[in-house]
Amino acid sequence: MFDYPVVLTPDENGTVLVTFPDVPEAITFGADEDEALLLAVDALETGLSFYVDARKPLPTPSSAQGRPTVRPSALECAKLGVYQAMTEQGLRKTDLARRLGWHLPQVDRLFDLSHASRFDQLEAAARALGRHIEVRVAP
Image 1 (cartoon, rainbow, N blue to C red):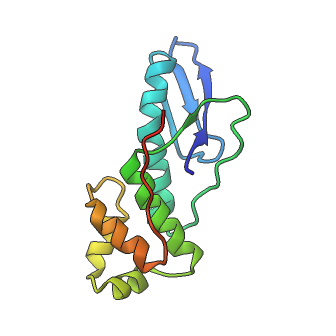
Image 2: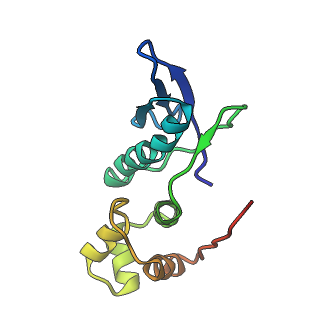
């Protein structure tokens, strides 16, 4: 759902630059491709957090077209999915807080990608939006 294609560009100094065509705010580099892709997860999460903080719609991932893809961690994917459902329904954080019977700072923390939210809270928020969260382990 949040698999974003990356462009890996060898730098002049021997490192590998990682950019995201769909999330231009996310940029990082690594000593080699493996390290660059590992660090790309944090760069992507940081880039997407700018959209959440600005209350903007999340960018839609484009087709990978043979490029490698990177996705946020599972917890962040759940947070982003709930955020996306909220924005698609034209709701604000205060609306979600009211539906959940929570204080606004609780909802703010729910969408803070650096905060270790509890999964049951994300499930409650998804239910309040008429959605559910699915988790699976894939090969």
